Amino acid sequence: MTQSASIDPNLQQALENLAPGIVVGHRLIVPGDEAALSDDEAQSIGSTVVAVRRASGAARLIARELLARRGHPPCPLPKTASGLPAWPPDIVGSLAHDDHIAIAAVAPRREAEAVGIDIEPAEPLPPDVVDLVVTARERDGLNDDPLRGRLLFAAKEAVYKALYPRDRVFLEYHDIEVDVAGNKAVVRNERVIELRFCVATHVAVLAFARPAATAAA
Image (cartoon, rainbow, N blue to C red; front, top):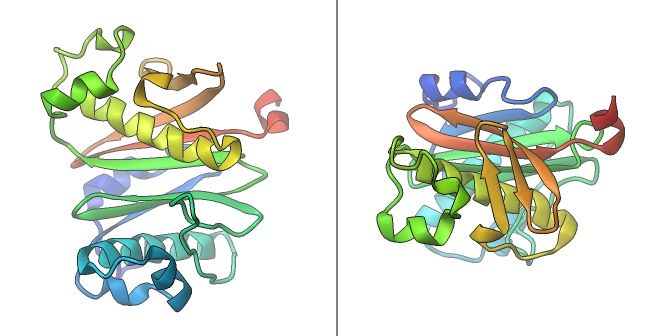
């Protein structure tokens, strides 16, 4: 990240090198980030709520910086009808934010065929949400780690973001089984996707799939 960017040093250190070939960055959302939206981006987002536009602008500031690090020229990243950003043809990526932090992950298609990321506050998942998210098998260890539920939630959000642009299949939380120890998730169609976890001041999860030739190498 550039020196002018507002970042959380502890979180950025944890995000570094989550997965080779995929760059990840974050930004603390600050007043004025909404001005980073291009006309196309602002129109695609639609919302006039300042907080929404600010978070979307912050996420795109990060994405543009990560693209520049990959030697990619600046370009708008408007939201598509699916709600996910439209990336350049040679790039896969993902954006996310909570109320305070925006995050982005970017990779060339030769390095990854699917990428999804999510960020959540490092707080326990509300009990009424746990049943919606966690499968029976995933409940092992849930009571031993107050952040396990939040980690599972973030992982499933990241998996959906990674796979939907390619498969166009809507996934419920129970359609995704997360193996935290194995760094992977299995979807109901038996597709397997890799996961990398980051637990610092926030919980972040990166989901990705390598191209077949790369995975076999």
